[in-house]
Length: 111
Image: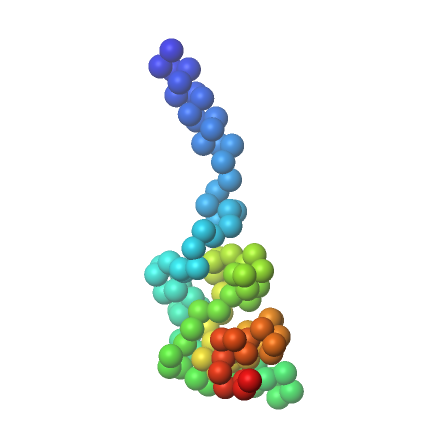
């Protein structure tokens, strides 16, 4: 009876998807992932100018940004994150969601 109970528990556990395969329940990215991101991106903004192909040189006040936005189903996996300076993070937000939506969050875009 006890053995049967353990088998059922094991089957349930195996049927559940791995944590990395499930959608994140919170907007918070783990400290470990942030640390790995900073190391991978060498503490530098990852924005590349589309015309010159030069990388932004900012190294302060960097923000973890989802490549596929969290609001559009993006995960907190390292492969879906990049470091951006605040200016390029705002630019990405406008590119992803449009000026009309982002005006509510970014007063510098005007009324």
